[in-house]
Length: 609
Image 1 (cartoon, one colour):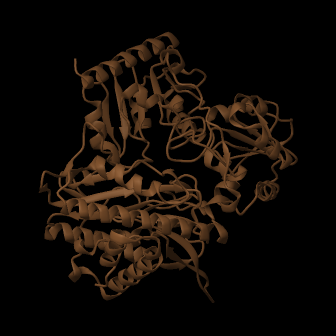
Image 2 (cartoon, one colour; image 1 turned 60 degrees about the vertical axis):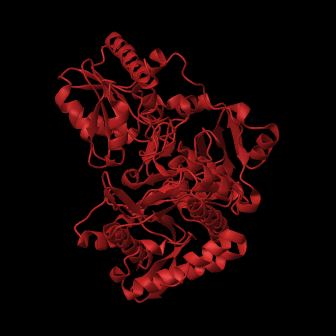
């Protein structure tokens, strides 16, 4: 039996064990979300249950298992990957149109008989998600049971909680102190009449405490809950993770440290008549159920979520410096790539990942990648969340033979003074007129959004169409959002705002000064090639008129956009002017940080068109 078939057999064995546990508990369908008790995007190994059960390694997906059926619901970003990884496992690929689609709930409604029971671990099931499931199941007489964790029964070698110590975000890069953030949070609590506030999202906690960790891949956060009162702030984290000296400093600044597992008990002990603020989209069902009935619950967005999305002027300046270093790393990488192709070296998609990470590692302040590098050549570039693996990747050049087409590279870095995320498309060999047309249409959309001026408070989803317009005019569409929020040495995907039709235009998505958003339209032709061009944008003041305050975007990312891929006839005069001005800025700010081949590459790739 080969390795792949052995892996599929293991998945079938695990599903059989889960079904046996379901029978014992009289559960008709079991839900396994991609989630932990903090509703994180990237999960510690302990909560990688969906991956363990299904063998699917994508970061997003939901598994449902019944006695006679198993299905994995994923959106279009993961269809190709899931189709390949699910073969022979007995799990069906269930395609959904968007990441927010409730299609799996519809399946439960149609397939679980009245009087039946749907189960899920309430410790990792989001409160808002649980409510949506119950709302659909109740009219059918189907019960949602969340008081048991079947994974605990069948996953015998389940990993423990992470134990890597937390550390201080360097004060040189943390301009707002813990005391100031705690005071701000209590002011916001007072505005809504809250005596207590529960925070479970890891990036909110890291932001509030000015601490960082390494408990999940790519995002420098640590596993914890926080319960903030008017006069005390409790941080629930594995005690061995907090060094004694740091614990002393936290105590002096208003934070007491308690064991991670005490969080539920602390909620249960809240005094009767008090008021607790929590965010229903950012806590799990189990945490909500721990709150006594005599405690009044105020449901609203975490104040920290809004606050951390609005970078201060000092933070923005740090981020600009991080972008310069990231740009220098990319100049060194791309100059190496051009020279390696000229030398007829062997280059694969794996090589791209290794080299781009090595270039960043040499830059000051670099900590780790901000996500797994996407390096997709031709057909693989058409998969928005593609990842090259040692046993499945494309060869770009080998033994003097160079392929022709487009290489899409989406990568990023975590620096102590900023988080980066950039996508560039690099021409390999010769490109076709159709490829250059697609590239230019995407570039036009990216530039049009970059040049936008808009009223302060505009709901971020409403401007998504600006980037799509040039692409729509050609009768083309792409399935993902145009942009996501980005943290400050925190999560590379950060709410509450996002330039995407998949996000509701709510008050919390209003665009405010200091917010950072990606700008990454694309065109994907399955089996052929993909194009995506991405910069990060900072909301900055533009002007104030009789109609109010207006904002504009400052482009933060500093890396040339390859003009060899452009169909010049499709660019308007103002778009060409924007690109030339951008390249002049890149050359001016990155040039002093590189030398030799990287400097010459930078000068060549920032020439005016």
